[in-house]
Length: 237
Ligand SMILES: [Zn+2]
Figure 1 (cartoon, rainbow, N blue to C red):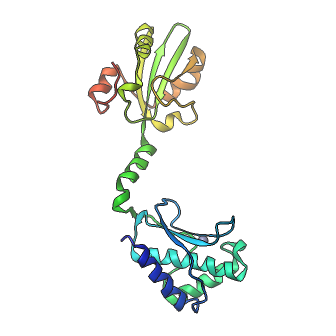
Figure 2: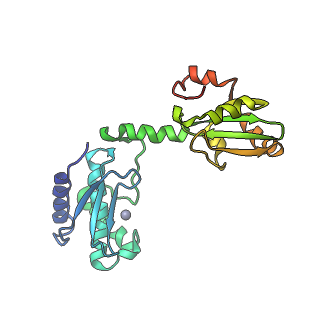
Figure 3: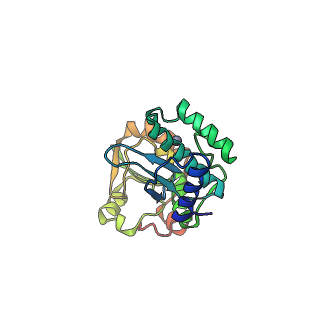
């Protein structure tokens, strides 16, 4: 489910009564779309205090309620002067009390295994996942004294990424090959955002550092293969 701000405020008031004897003040509450932080109680830095609740994921209602109660325990500690302890003994004590009072299990961290993003974020999440496993394309242009490497971790190269210069580089090269590899193969290598940008390797450097890595990749004999294959947007002539 995806709660509204009204839902969140209702739960806040409910918990304030049930757990905190209505001692907690009304604070600003904002809905965010944060993927890595389900909730946040902020204070200091001249921002005042407030709470943020992420509706990035489509979670069961109790996971949202749990998040809110978790943050309310921080607010309670803030009011008592224990905020700097974060999840220290005072937070743990009030969280345990809140758990007893509500039956919700207030933990330090939420377990989101098996939780899917909300409908509004499905496409976004797909892009994140794709990025993790994006293949890298590497074009190795071999000249007599060096290799010119063009690599990208983009799934698709736009035609605007190519230029006549690229074409000439390729046709004048003694030899050239295209590889598709797991993006991880190139972790730590100088990145190139478009096909125009490459990285020049001397022969020796190529043999030592690039070739062993490329062996894990799938070699594509020529660029046409990529055009015909799943990279039909690859604007390479
Ligand atoms: Zn916390």
